Image (cartoon, rainbow, N blue to C red; front, side):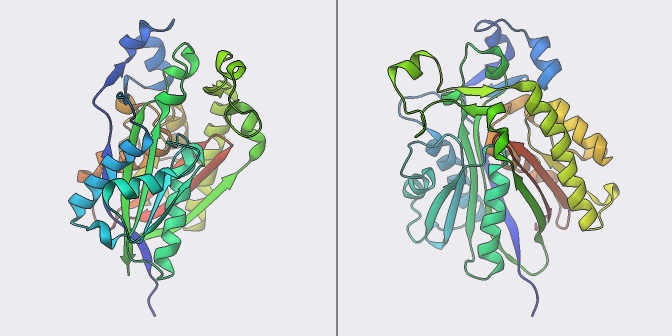
Length: 328
């Protein structure tokens, strides 16, 4: 009996129309285009504006495009997993809301929260339902409205993040798809990157709002060091386990957190710059959406059988890597 692989059979992305450039940020905080570009590689980011529009709106647009482009009926979908750290509400899940918005009625759905590694976690999880033969069509979407949890008076964080969503369709394939992955987490990293209030430990109050404790708190240097070491290390481990040399990798698909982190990872893996997907200059760090947005941007350059190495590091800490072969 031949092994079933979970293959990406379609991809689609969405970013809002509103653009927040580095020059726009110069008017909000003490920063400048050169400082931001040199340290992050970011030139602009997209921001979702509009009353009542949350992460489910971003995910809805990506999933609608995915269904249309792949000629898939919402009734055919068995499962939808949404990776996000900015859910519309504490409950119900954003995935549940997305299914309702796009007309998916014959599926179950849930959210995964693993910060910037969320899409990898969700992709690995969704793949298991395909590999075991339980389901035939699974949607994995990464979406975050980071502008909702960013303090635009904090120049250390507000220059980094943007809003967006990306979605993929997973289907069974006898030859192509997800080959292997490695996922990790370390809760001791919480102190370096988290949101101080709004959860069950410190519920929202006038005091927490006044203290601006509902925004991203990040210790930049600690996060940078962890990301540089661990994104490369876990990718190396996966390559070694699968007997992959740098020349065997068609594309490195890194989480778009910081251009310097991406460059450090690329150099350690000895992968040429032209083999690295990068769109951080256009979107900034869209958290769970960065990896699918890369696949969406580079879709026209991908060929059947290409070897892709996906890697990410996120708050928590979470991190992981995945090796897959492109299916179309």
